[in-house]
Length: 94
Image (cartoon, rainbow, N blue to C red; front, side, top):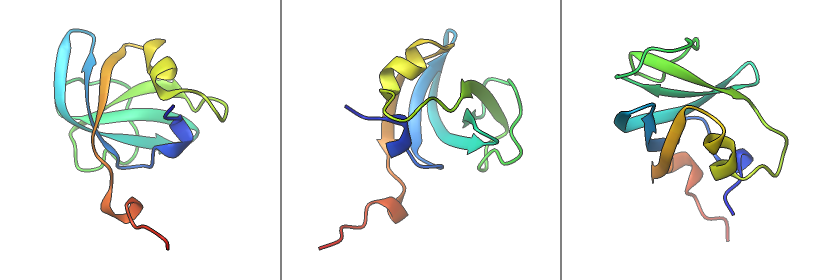
């Protein structure tokens, strides 16, 4: 089970906002809110859109242990898929 706290700022995703398919987006977390930064749907604005034109507020950061699929399921953002984990987060400590 993937939990929201396992997702880092800048994690690349694809998703659907309402009926619009977003093939390139990133997760942003600011002021205890989760945003999807992307170039197609203008929503609530975060300060740093991570290089994208728009952001979409998903909602407040949920409590620890919340399944990411369940979190997004209760919003306008659907069909969320991780497309790339930030390189700085893929380092393996041996």
